[in-house]
Image (cartoon, rainbow, N blue to C red; front, side):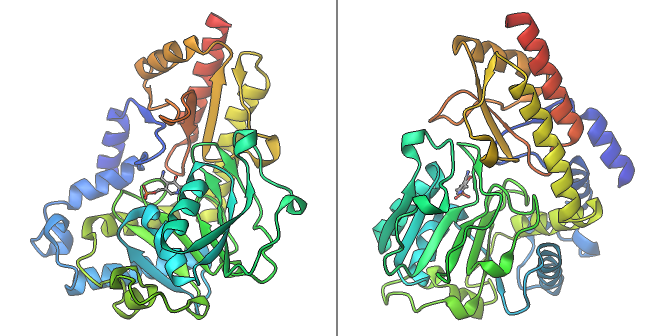
Length: 367
Ligand code: PMP
């Protein structure tokens, strides 16, 4: 298996900086490839595996244990593995947490979460950063008062804007709900300060199709009667995350990713690497008169680094030449344009170093 991983690494000539689905560690892909025809000696591929088999039940238990250990999830918290992506959580959360949510709107994803909450319940905006182009986070004294809010929702890392909360916001006893999709497992988080944490898997935890919900069952409220069963956390909890056929393969990849994180030395170790990786890119941006990074320094994301060149027409050239150099998928989000490097857990430090070198070289040639 190690030899296969080495082979895969040596055949990998590109670094994939896309925001999601994102790069996976080559050794995880190698392991999946090796196991694909026959899972655990059963003669059955994970592509065709039943979710109620003893083997899959064992995998589920292990994934649950590994996740709890890695994230330090309190024993009274529940963990759900769901379908529907983080976007479905935008609606599921308000249905189950009282339907009168307060939202910190710090980028396009929290704006979407707010709009979805307004469709199924009531919601209020505590702060909206759209006027600053989502380039900063609010100070606590800029928040509007939480008016009878049943919860406070925030997006820990805004994948498009590249703005990240580096500390848990203080909600003064109001249940705190967090979208951790683009930073889960990238650094330690204070799980017990949250009533709900959700994250879809395709950035730091594997492939698309599966979504984590980590919640305090005591904080749940009874959803409206018209709520579909699959959008009721309690119903999913009673069914042990199997209210219907789950995304078996995505769950299997997630379980593999958790093992990989453990092998790397855990979340703290990855946090150190992620800090170093982000620093490499931001120091190129800060020492340059050629690249422009608009996000305020105190809230720069360690996962998604958006930037522009002074002359916008050079961005197309940058992206073409980066692609040719094996630095792929660096285009900014389709709504914002520009350039964005997503440097999740699976992006090695060598990939970031290669990008930094390319950026300096490009500046020398075009600056
Ligand atoms: N929240 C954030 C912060 C995201 O980055 C994304 C996806 N890029 C989503 C929510 C939506 O996730 P999904 O596509 O899995 O529904």
